Length: 462
Ligand code: S3P
Image 1 (cartoon, rainbow, N blue to C red):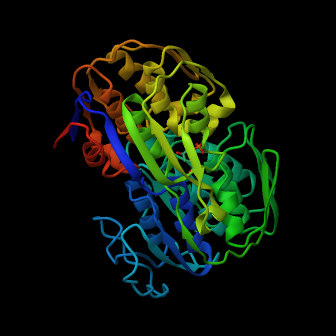
Image 2: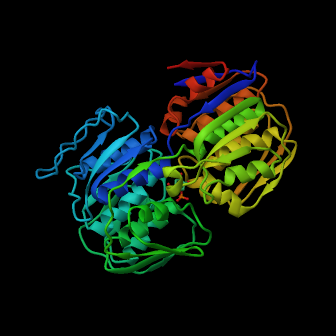
């Protein structure tokens, strides 16, 4: 699909908008609820393709889970569950398509799948499932789409092997990932990369083993796993950048509400800063993950943040965020902030191009192995739009303030590239065509319809 995005002729306006549920938290909610004892009810899951991949893999492992409105998780049929699976829970008429009921099978209840587990485009699915399957000793093969099949998986396989698992990866340490039957031992893993996916894989494997398992990283990555495990009754100890837990653990089923995804909110906030005003309710603002908001203030933007109270705030803090059009000044963003805004770097680069002066983003080498090489994609696309951008090994240097022109951009099978350039297009002086715009659905289904509702002119061509 191509999205032809026109320069804004009127300011964007949106009050009390909601963004899709947080993707990181949604994966964990479905996966941890599956490992729990008893039923969990989850409201406000991320509706995109990635979380559907997680749901499908869980169904293949014999976990009975229902979408709130009783419809299947994807058009693709879920392979039949192995004989002896627990019965599916009743459908609840009060629940909607983004809600789920999961009947946990406990730590010993996962069944080896009959076919490979297809993680689609989702790195979080592949890495977290590798940890769980290794810990549970459930043999399975994890595969992914073309983009995921290029991403590094040895970083998760190697520490799990160090703890006794038999995990192999394909050529150059990429998918497929194969986990063999077997047991693991507890231990301490020290990682050179700060990564919540890695940390989660190791801690999840540790749930199954007798004794303490810990993970230490150079900087503290997002802590959704630690928070949710605690919510489900598992004590997780955190000291500095080390997180540890003792297995075997027991997870209890919970009712939880997933906050809106700050990573999706970021595109709307950026569009409004360029021209307009928006307010968004119920956005997750977990400090280990809210670097985008700090980056905005460093670029001189004022964002009104009102913390919300309520049941979900106990799990993850949420806020109402409002912004208005304003001018930005470039700044050098420090690596610890960049880690807390790692998924928002593409849209921060767009804001850097719109700001006056120079913006430098460093310490973002991980972006080279995301759904695409996001450093290269942003440099190339912004240059095509007329921006002055220098590609650094671990980031970007952007001399902002030049007028952006319309261009032909390819999403490179990457949702955040499609979304970032669609926002940049609003601030250009002629229309921009984003091809592969359907990838936006991975994290933000309905994005283009929402932009139109807010006053943008967007044509979609299939
Ligand atoms: C995620 C962790 C981050 C992030 C990704 C989601 C998670 O990746 O970029 O989009 O849910 O744990 P890394 O763990 O590779 O840093």
